[in-house]
Length: 115
Length: 111
Image 1 (cartoon, each protein chain N blue to C red):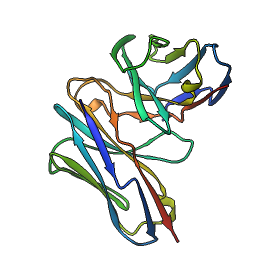
Image 2: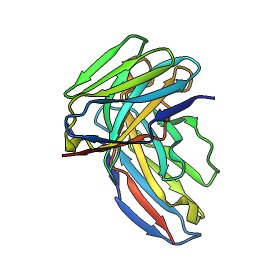
Image 3: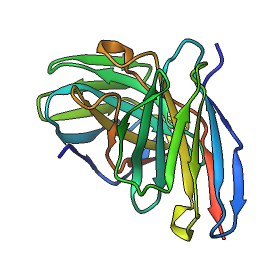
Image 4: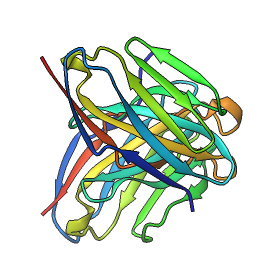
């Protein structure tokens, strides 16, 4: 069974540009969450999608957005990139949103460097 | 506000020297407490979920336990390949699948 797939693995962007990251969840999983990991702040929740609807949002500026498609694949977008957006962006997939279906399995991440 | 505190920040062990990692938490309505292992440059690897106080789970040299205020990850007779960052996270019943993570414990096992 394939795991969570994130593309691309590495990205280098210039300040002011925008970027789109992609996540394909485990087959059958319908919930996708995004996290930002930095050495200073650790792992922080960005947002969560289930059935193409955003269900939960973390404390990040509006430059960070996401969406989920009917096949559960998800994308996140960061506009007007800042140097502080350099981080490892992680996607996690879960079977559902209730009971014991909420165990989260992570992809390998996308390493974004803003220069 | 949900909070997770892990200790120690870093731990160095000799191969075969057993020890425990601590995860203290405050959360309004715990749905589950999660343990992950993360290697440098990779995504967190799922280890365990604990749902209620008194629950224990084991996997190879690892054993996780849960009380109402904290969780322990016991490592028995560790090997160098157990070296990694161990992350603890909590999930509240009322906040979807959102995980709140601790800062992690960096474990180094020397042969």
